[in-house]
Amino acid sequence: MYGGRLLKIEEAGVDIAGLRTKSFSIANEPIDVTTDDDSGIRKLLETIAGGTLEVASKAIDVSFDGITKNDDLIKAAAQGTALVKAYVIVMPSGAKISGQFAFVNLEITGEYQDAVTFSGELQSTGSWSWTDAP
Image (cartoon, rainbow, N blue to C red; front, side, top):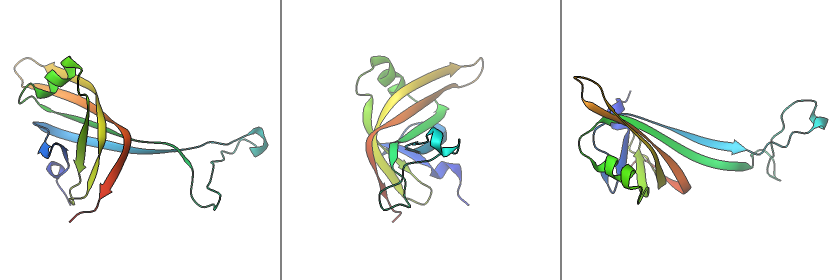
């Protein structure tokens, strides 16, 4: 069993500072070709060879939150520049997903007598690659 600290998000080989929770989802949305002739039963477009589905869109969405350690993420969000960067999602096994991601959302929370926290979201743009664990 792996601990959550082993799931990492890196930028330029460095972990994003202060993360406490990380999650990501991978979407492979098929092409729906259902018609009235299908009697209300969904039909998805398969490849000519059959057995595999044609995919309309693929996406990875990454959510994270943590404790503010510096102003780097806040500065990037506020300036609105260079929001598309190369990020790497590192699995507990050491396998990696690498690609370009857009930094689309940042929320800062400063509760009374508590640490300043943040939450953010990255969305893939373009293709990505998988690297097996060493």
